[in-house]
Image (cartoon, rainbow, N blue to C red; front, side, top):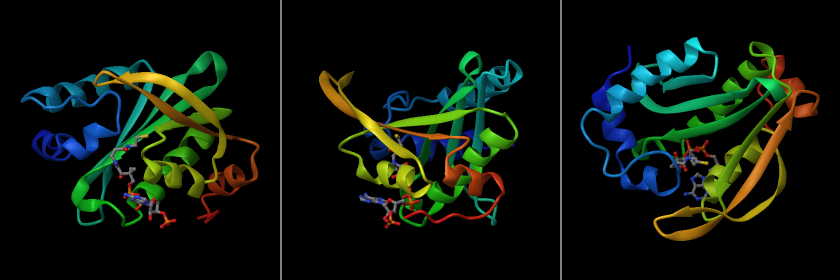
Length: 174
Ligand SMILES: CC(C)(COP(=O)(O)OP(=O)(O)OC[C@H]1O[C@@H](n2cnc3c(N)ncnc32)[C@H](O)[C@@H]1OP(=O)(O)O)[C@@H](O)C(=O)NCCC(=O)NCCS
C-alpha cells in the first residue's frame, strides 16, 4: 500500500514540479490520494501502468509510469524521483525495469519519453537505458506562461538495448 503522505512530501517539491507537466504545485491535500486511486481505475482499463519506486528498505523514492496507446502498441514512459534520492541511480534502475516490463509483459513495440531540454538529468536516464534521441520538439509546451522545448527519445522492441532489457540483463549503455 502506498502512503499518500509520502507521495505528497516527495511529489510536492518545487524541484519535481519544475520539470514535469502534470504534477501540480502547490500539491494540495487530497491530491496524492486521488492520484493513487486514479491509478487503480486506469490500470483496470489497461490504459496506465504506474509503479511506485520502492527501495529495499521499503522507503518510497519515486514513481514510474507507462501510458499505453494500444492501437499503436506503444507506451509513453514518465517518472519522478524525490529530491532526497536524486543521483543515486534509482531513476535509471527503475526505468530499465519498467521498460523491460513494457516489452515483455505488455507486449508493446515502442516506448517513448520526452523531457524539457533544460532537464538534462532526465535525458541522461533515457540515454542510459538505451533510448535513441529522435529530435527536439521546439516550443511544444507552454508551462507557467513560457513556451518550452522538449527532447524526444524512444526505444523499439527490436533495438539491441531493448533485447538486453527484455532478457532482464542490466545493460549499461552509457
Ligand atoms: C530526472 C530524475 C528522474 C533523475 O533521477 P535520478 O534518480 O537522480 O537519476 P539517476 O541517479 O539514475 O541518474 C541518471 C543520470 O543523470 C545524471 N544526473 C542526475 N541528476 C543530474 C543533474 N541535476 N544534472 C545533470 N545530470 C544529472 C546522473 O549523473 C546520471 O548520469 P551518469 O551516470 O552519466 O552520471 C530526477 O532528477 C527527477 O525526478 N527530477 C524531477 C522530475 C523529472 O524531471 N522527471 C522527468 C520528467 S521527463
